[in-house]
Length: 227
Length: 227
DNA sequence: AAACGTAATTATGAATTCATAATTCAGTCA
DNA sequence: TGACTGAATTATGAATTCATAATTACGTTT
Image 1 (tube, each protein chain N blue to C red):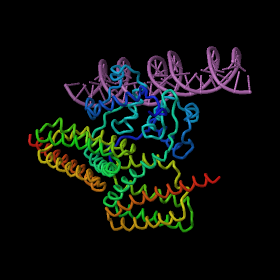
Image 2 (cartoon, rainbow over the protein chains, first blue to last red; image 1 turned 45 degrees about the horizontal axis):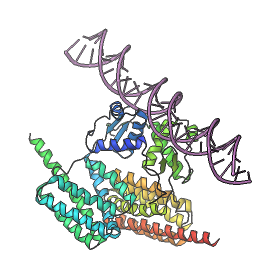
Image 3 (cartoon, helix red, strand yellow; image 1 turned 90 degrees about the horizontal axis):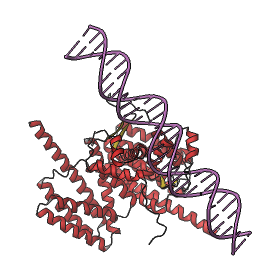
Image 4 (cartoon, each protein chain N blue to C red; image 1 turned 135 degrees about the horizontal axis):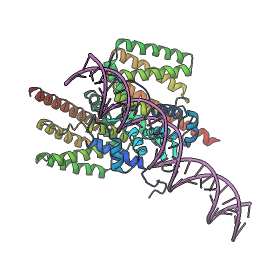
């Protein structure tokens, strides 16, 4: 046990940052919506001061936008923002792959292997919910496995901004199969502890995910136009 | 001109974030030091509320550390943090190099060429101040040239954390010459708009900078031990 | 009725106040 | 003298208050 570790007692505003972030990521507060300061204060039972502090932090993370004298709005996820974000996430995932190969313990790899198997099973039975969960677990384990806090925090920030695009819901059958295949390859590289290889694959995997998202978006807007 | 662009009128806390960030990066507030809330309020002529809001933001950027009921301290730059930060910056620079090659205008490249020449001149006359300035300008121009706001903001955040290490002061003659050579190569790739090539070089350039820093640190601590 | 202008209301940014935790300092006792 | 105790002081987190900007509601005019 590390006795130098400081006692964890979250302050009010830290707690609020967490909660508000969830509201935004979970889509309880929709993009473009005004953040109802007063209501939130009441439902959380806090005064405006800590809530506003939390909003400032969220703004610096890009999850909300502050307009002088007009309060905060949930940031819109623009096409341009996604276009800019994906390449950055892809680079971070590449680095994470490289580092995870070097720094993960055998047990850590074994754990990912288990989640991978669960993910494949979920794919076979077309259980989207379990699939997404396993997929998420694998990516998180790889990021954590990199053992680089800076990398992790920046990845988390970017992932939060992107997750709101909810691009996973319109996962096509093709893309799903392709993603599984990519994950198979990733596992091979991880088992072989081929750092460069895994990094390269993770980068590509992320960019393919983006491409699929763009494609799905285009198709959706086509449908809309037809109405 | 874009008429939809909102009017820029910085609020108090945004202004303070800027100013405080500078105080930390410029080393006016030293790592580990307590941030003197009261004094800063007086010298800036503001109340504690906006200043504290600014501190929360700086904390989320990792520049200061908040301790519950004990205020804020300037974050220490640990060896481990540097070790984690450099590879991440290097990846971002790689991406910036690739994107800059594709997105910079010819005029943009010409401008960088000018600053490069100024940098070489400064090297020849061993004018450290001008050298650092030109170097900084070149890197900034390349990051901006990537035309990716997400990339830019995350790079800025990380650069701020690292700049405080003041690793540039102990620039050895060897490393200096090597850096110039690397910059020459970078210019070649940029002129040729070789995106992959420039990206690769910028990544390596950053990691070499890190290696030189580590070496300089080791030598400094050796000297200390001899005393 | 639609458009404009103005007053009332509300929301926001920032200062101030308040309760409490942390720190300093003085006094006591070994 | 030096370590400990507890009161006084200070600093901090959060609530409240206050001034002002933004929004809404209303009335007037055409």
